[in-house]
Image 1 (cartoon, protein in one colour):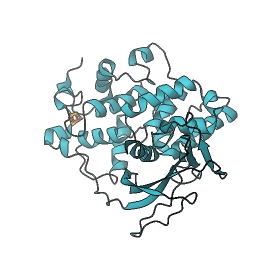
Image 2: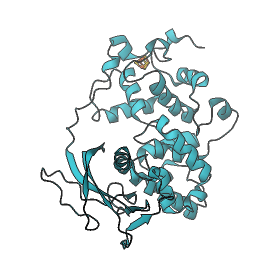
Image 3: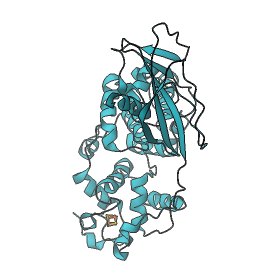
Image 4: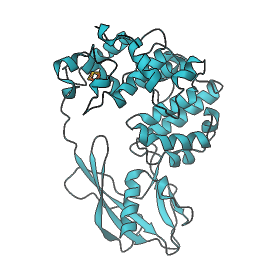
Amino acid sequence: MRDLNSQSQPQSSILLEWYDQHARSLPWRISPADRAAGVWPDPYRIWLSEVMLQQTTVAAVKDYFHRFTSRWPTVADLAAAPDADVMAEWAGLGYYARARNLLKCARVVAQDYGGIFPNTYDGLIALPGIGPYTAAAISAIAFDRQATVLDGNVERVMARLYDIHVPLPTSKPQLKEKAAALTPAERPGDHAQAVMDLGATICTPRNPACGICPWRTPCAARAAGTATELPKKTPKKPKPTRIGIVYLARSAAGDWLLEQRPDKGLLGGMLGWPGSDWTDSPDSPAPAPPFEADWQLLNAEVRHTFTHFHLILRVMLAELPAEFAAEENQRVIARHDFKPTDLPTVMRKAFDLWKGC
Ligand code: SF4
């Protein structure tokens, strides 16, 4: 181990030594020892994990990752999967546009690239659903390229390491510049993962464990006593609240009426309950039940928060007539085929309310 006290500037080599000992074991990750022995990560698994991890935690993603890779072990398998199966498997992870783009991307890679992901940032960013962050992460982690990966963990570490008090998101370019300057030519993929791990396990938001941090000596925020104040963030505007109605219709035999949502927009392409638009008007949304019936209002409401608004859904119940003729976007799901886990979370909450009645 190096003499940490000799550090005046943060050095990647010190962090990599720490990573060699303390890297998290993740289902998509190649350990530093295996990587040193010449094992390369599977770009499909790195891509899948990065898409799943956007806006979500490792803990929330692990089971989804295992299910996806067991069911579709290669990008060609995923590309050949029916849309409905992939959307159902994704249900609960949220941000459903990502699942639709995931499929689009898999099909482009399978059809246009012979099932092999491009190995450059420029090639990756040209694919559907891959933005600058994901392209950088895949370039670094899967192909060991010197790309700068800036996620929330890395932003926090950089803001503290250099005691940067400019609030996010204004500080992003500055934080990226710092992260880029630290990225080494040797082992850039391990370096990127090491900074992420440091942020996830040591330089945590509330209680950074500075005493055991490999960058404790050069860390400016530690010296200034400002670590827990950083990174500063521009206060967010309060989210508006929208309201809507969902209609749960169940036949005497226990079959359910569901509707496929339009491809564009929130929860696009997912199955859900028929319902009204979601409106932020203080007046009630216009009711639009899927059929005439004696609809009963459930004595509880669904509350759910999306990225940009809170949603309150009233839940109406009625019996689905035996002779009900479903429209093109509607499906009557037989009792034994109905799986609440196939529904997006907000729709599952309505089901859970019904079940709890
Ligand atoms: S010394 Fe503390 S604040 Fe600085 S990088 Fe390490 S854990 Fe974060």
